[in-house]
Image (cartoon, rainbow, N blue to C red):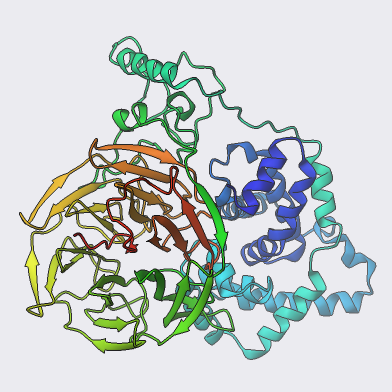
Length: 619
């Protein structure tokens, strides 16, 4: 399923240009404020804003990830502002009267003079600020956008936006803030703005890139084999050094979603989000060519199972952790917003009953934190590690008893960290990966023995990573995805490594077809499901891929309705519940339930024991 933006873009590309008006209405105020911050003139900002939307519509078919439309729009705005500034710098007549806003000539001179003085004073005050401060200040006061909206639009963390606003305020006089709002009211976009754009784009012809009809699987597999064999021929080059097609006997309109991507319709992976030459190999995260084995010989699936919307969680949040006890899901901690829309890190605990589809508030966790990990041991939930905010890390362990609705203090983990994952095997907890204070990513593995009440260092994971997701299958822990570095720009891994606690040894397995970070993993009916996440700071997934540990192969299932990352997920009675998260635009309270194809299963490897994704207690 598509998001709202994706649905509107789909309609635009299929002969309904009038639907573009909804995208203009949604984003015009923010783009107008952004261009004003860069250009310093309302009339110029209006002209450039109009050009931004026309350019966006003209190039709409080139947008590969429809749900990243807003980020793409701001990149176009930034480029158009730079172009306008270069053009103005070359003009010698820019001060002439014919270049002024014609509306100025329609009002008495003295009023025009006063307004120009106000505008000039506002412009000078803003220009005295660094550009980063000017952008957020203008979007907030002139664009009327909240912290989370600005963060979404500029793809910057909300805490950074809040900090820039505070520092910008400290550098401006108080009367400037009132002037900003008043001035914007006088220069807001006219009602006809959207109408003019829609009338303009109606004359622009755009065509969607058509896709090949899927071949029968037997023919598709044969075609894949032929392609693989032919690629060995030195006279037929299928991939150039940068991953693009050099030659192809396939129809010229085969859809290629990303540079270097294998045409997925040929191999019956119709919903594959990314198979590009920029996927990390695992240990170093270096670029590689698409995995031909994973791509061409991926098991034929893609439509199995069904997603259903369930009751929203009371508190919208991301970077939370969920665990299951006695068939009920406990959502713990994370990042949320207060009543003013400001970012806060919380200790909130809420209980979900899948049978009744209801939520209930429970006793708060003693320590507010996000990027923590939770797991279940002997009917109690262990909340381990995490971070208090955008700095620092916790080694804190706190234990929740759902029966008494009380918390107790546990033995601290030796290494403080957040963005870790925990799994339980044979009555022992394994804390894996993460980072301390957003520093270097860790490969650290530490084992907790509740009988002896001690932590013990174990063999390091081969690939150090943050936001790694782990899951237990057949007494072994599968560590999947994550990012190898936290500093920007980051790029997710497709790496899968398996830890055997009995041997204290790691081994490599087949990479995930889709590299990702901030995703969830879980076990149902002997298979490992990998859901959601992000490739980089722009590419969001709703993709669901399933791994068979017996064959070491991957297949694809029905996409999650809401693309998201840094969410949490739990399994109850072999059904998967995706909870909360972040869409790169908003914090979510959304809960979606997935019933795998073939449910109820004749034989379940985990019986009827409710289990938490990534934290299954092996029998």
